[in-house]
Length: 313
Length: 178
Picture (cartoon, rainbow over the protein chains, first blue to last red):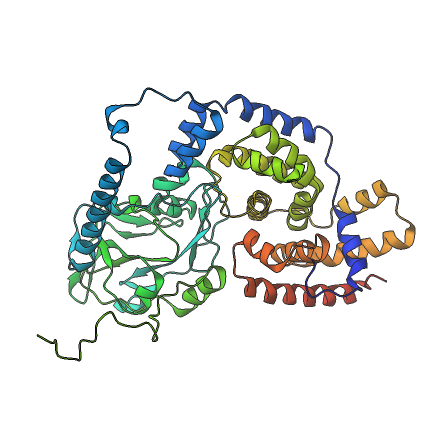
């Protein structure tokens, strides 16, 4: 039902609907061709290939098997082991993941990531799904040589093109809704975004549209050499709270978008330089375009133990 | 279970033919979303074909986070917005509105109203136009629009308010629908 519209709007509704143009000649024949083509490539192998390319989930694979009615293969030894083996494997996997996450969280995040993000692969989510996910990240580009060496944020990037579905439009937020398999899942990377912004990101320099570049020279800021690097927070609230970022110095363009509401700074500055927080309006923008992450602990949530009381022997 | 629901289930499970049948049923409303953003009959066709191409490519990965219809509307909306961004030299004042009026055989009074409304809508930004179309024209709820556009419901509500105010101002300047 229409919300907050009065009967006066019936005329408006009528006129809006009447405005919608009829399809042009040949419209449906083009769409029928698209459907025929898709139908011709909807064999189990094609479906599996497509799903793999877009970062499949177990559910996707199962649904493909169900929908195509594949013949059940001869049970393997592992399959004959049945549920006990599956449960044991799941437990091992969960324990492993918890260990990895624990190690990552407890690691000193000031340490430079010398593997350029490869260490993230153990934690990698599937990345944004093609034509399904619509994520946003706060971002900024900091150049310590601006403002007479005091440093400043570069203006927002703006896209006139959006071929990949990873772009920004002058709002300080990266919009991530991949259109294709080459820009979805693990392929959703920072380099795709900068390319869409007509900016070239490498480990040596960030080359802007006008040909100017950050990096590639030997400038210093506060007497220390400026280095092109990327600072990354898993969530925008971590950046706002001043949490230590993950710092990348290699494979910058390959840094992956792994969840909604990340925060990114492409910085040309000494690695240990303290940068100002990203401009507040960018956080306001992301609050306006995507659901805020509820990270505040509940005050009424009971602690499992009362540590203020002595333990009874 | 009705036929439409069965079709949607089949399409969500990757049945391309079922999806094609639903496309025929939903095309008019989807065209409304595309048209409200791009404001050109030819561009609307382009957006729709691109929308269906993208949807057919992704159908195997559809996981049911939203309804298939909402999912398709979301692709359509984003494709239309991107089309506008591509078109840096979009022609203003094209004669699509007049063509539509001619095609529907409107009376002169209705035609005049539509011309005025069309002119007023042309002056709005694409976001506002699409919100007016989806809520006032197609009757979608704020929740549905929120899923399509990808913003919280409250944001949709406030944006619709601003869009309606902007349309009211424009129609007063254009003479207004009578």
